[in-house]
Amino acid sequence: MTVRVRFAPSPTGYLHMGGARTALFCWLFARKHKGTFILRIEDTDLERSTEEMTQGILDGLRWLGLDWDEGPYMQSEGIPLHREAALSLLEKGLAYRCFATPEQLEAQRQEEQAKGGQWRFDPFSRHLSRAESDRLAAEGRPFVVRFRVPDDAVVRFVDHVYGEQERAARDIEDIALLRPDGTPLYNLSVVVDDIRMRITHIIRGQDHLINTFKQVLLYQGLGAPLPEFAHLPLILAPGKAKLSKRAHGEVVAVTTYRERGFLPAAFRNFLALLGWAPGGDREILSTEEMIELFDLDAINRSNAVFNFTEGDPENWTDPKALWMNGVYLTRTPIDELLPYVEETLRRAGLWDEAWAGPERARFAATVDLIRQRYHSLLDFATLGRPYFTEYYAFEPEAVQRNLAEPRLRGWLPLLADRLATVDPWVHEAVEKAVRGLAEELGIKAGVLINAARTACTGQKVGPGLFEILVVLGRDRVVSRLRQVRARLASSGCGPGWC
Ligand code: GLU
Image 1 (cartoon, protein in one colour):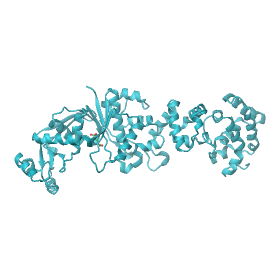
Image 2 (tube, rainbow, N blue to C red; image 1 turned 90 degrees about the vertical axis):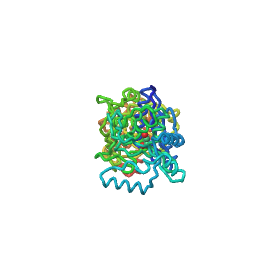
Image 3 (cartoon, rainbow, N blue to C red; image 1 turned 180 degrees about the horizontal axis):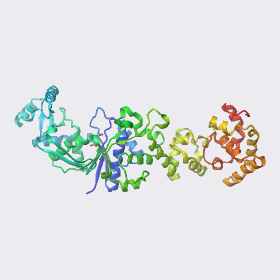
Image 4 (cartoon, rainbow, N blue to C red; image 1 turned 120 degrees about the vertical axis):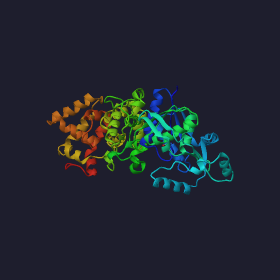
């Protein structure tokens, strides 16, 4: 059997974490079994579906690296086939026309509820003879086509995550297949499409578990073999509230992660662990490892919790997600990382074409040096700013701590002169020059080192000073050391000596 799985989002909203995780699990499963991953856009709710949402979903999947092998199919294109299937069920007597008006149905529902029961069907329509039903239809009476749920059956299926499922058919109402205007309804369209697309495994959110009983009946009615099912646990908000687009807005939108500097591989890794544990304590998994280890039966039944902190811009997402992004920023091969950093710098207006040309090696060395402490690509444009532009700010605390000594007013220009003669501009030579000057001046090297760090980056902490100086290059270092007094004076946070 060739595995065929589909991701079937409705384009009535943006791609959110839950949808993205479903897509990822479908994709991992397809890739693991060398099967086919199909994308089907369920746009049959024409009023609520938009082209913009469809594009957003496709962009999100592309960003996540979840490439599909077939599609995107638009569900609306199959409407004639869905209708045909409903009519064939009608023909076989497995479905019938339900002529009850919405008011009648409402009254019936209320009556059943008052008796402590549950509405299942309109008795008048369900028991109409075929001739009578044809006559009313010919008169132009509006009707819904409904599937006749058998009275005494038990609907069963085995779910890879939730195990054996069973429900008495008498607890299931007759399934609406076609609206009075002939348009198909969800359960029908999904089943007809899954059959004609020869889907072997249906992997989707747990919120669809309840629909599956109805869909199993439709498979049986249409004489098609059942696919396998795996329903994924919910993703909950902190405090175990249901995660919702409305309440949790951008924290759950995939685009937010892209905009806030996530690497797709990191986000993919984070998503994969929402409900699936590969075994052991392993958390960082390459895509290849995920594909190899992925198993529907290892998906956890209990709901996953997404621990973001709302309203705190510093901790806007799950700390584990940020930590993971940091790990990916450090471990991604530098050549793979550079295009992402480039995009970030371009967006921040900090990009210099030279870094794509003659300064490429220096750009790579800079990124490699500073990435160690970062958690987001955006950090390259904020914390990393002094490495990419002359317009950087001085942290007042750093100035107070490292530049307070009044004699630095004379020492820093001296250091600049000394460094101006260093050639070649390499770690050892730079270090020798700095330490040599400190010795001559009879001061601790640390004083010069800390002062030079703050003078050249505005910051208090960062990578080792000599590495910083090497990647900044001699010209920029010398000029920054010479200008520090004037810059501090104009920045308003200078020490007494400037
Ligand atoms: N279109 C449905 C949704 O967005 C999914 C249908 C399915 O996966 O069966 O929730």
